[in-house]
Length: 237
Image 1 (cartoon, rainbow, N blue to C red):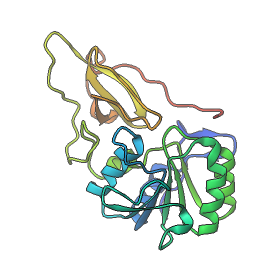
Image 2: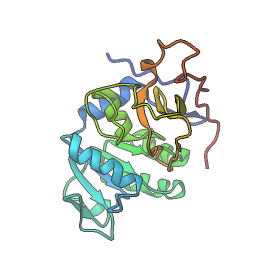
Image 3: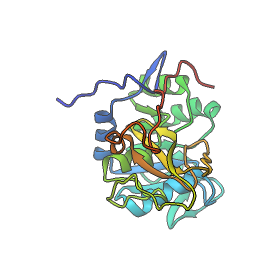
């Protein structure tokens, strides 16, 4: 039986423990259909960025939920989960944390297998509602980052290239350095002085995303290396 032990360094809080990497991989491997609630046609939104990746780099049967759109990236958009023509395996939530409990109830009523709450969003109440209704829960993780993590790598623009590298083009007069941690096992690497701009989904502007294991072998004096604390959480808004 596959190991479904939970992570010990991130995504934990009373009442909720993040599924292990093995469990998350199994969810993504076994899913055939995804519905993104809160998908946007605005390219500056994190949900558009994630939707673009899913459309271009995965084989999932996708549907989007947005009451103000009929189509996004060539994929049909529906006013609500109830309007979907079929029940998705995974419902991906881009909704405010205070709206997540109501969404969890909809997911339970719909009969989806998994509620995936995006990076930066947190609701223990929603997680409890979903799990009590027999729905698996992944919370505070980006489905794009997780899929790319398990399927070959992360490109500067956020797309899977099959190449994992911590090497960037050298900027004259600047040294490369590790600038931020955006997910467990993933780091952002950019030129010194680069802007590590992030939104609530953890999308970084102008930085390459690489597994931290890629830079583990470098000496401590390397400009790419710095100490990053584990992501402990005791509460969420």
